[in-house]
Amino acid sequence: MARYCCFGASFSEFTGHGSTASGKGKGCHGQVKVCYGYNLVRGMTNHPMEDYHVANLVDVKGNELGLFAIFDGHLGDTVPAYLQKNLFPNILKEEEFWTHTDRAITKAYEKTDQAILSHTPDLGQGGSTAVTAILVNGRKLWVANVGDSRAVLLKGGEPIQMSIDHDPNVERSVIENRGGFVSNMPGDVPRVCGQLAVSRAFGDRNLKSLLRSEPDIKVEDIDHTAELLVLASDGLWKV
Image (cartoon, rainbow, N blue to C red):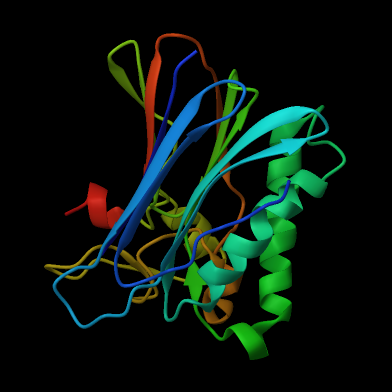
């Protein structure tokens, strides 16, 4: 399965889009003209779709924010569905959002993960990756991620990876220091305790003592050389 959304910039109320077996959409509006679209393709398996996304423009305190995200769930879709409804509102509620955006995003990610874990009876034992992009007034782009869903910005004809894959092999020492292990079985990807193929994720209560939900964050100035930003789950990047 692969889900992606993207926007291109040519110089309310929060809403999201649910997970379906397949689908696509687009929009183009805002004071700074931002065109965006999304597309969902289900793989050739009987595995249910567990990906959710957000693609929306909102006005907050006179500032235009583009909110874009991919949430790639595992062991069910309840956690990515929760993230779709709550992660951006939690980020925007942080007092430091306008002054120290990176700190606000980090706090919101961690608080959202804590909320997910506290709702385990309702949300189950599953989890989700996340890659979020916030475009502020068409001029400043903040990208944060946990897991292996990626963001790539095309600027001046050159691709810039705005996210970092959280691979169990790369963060092996952290996992082992917390009492876990990383398996490397022939023909398979590295996995935390033989189970999860990422070292950071939301949810995953049974592995939470070994995992982090702290995002990596990158910021980029957006000008006329910025052509396109693509967010996608690993179904696009790794297949």
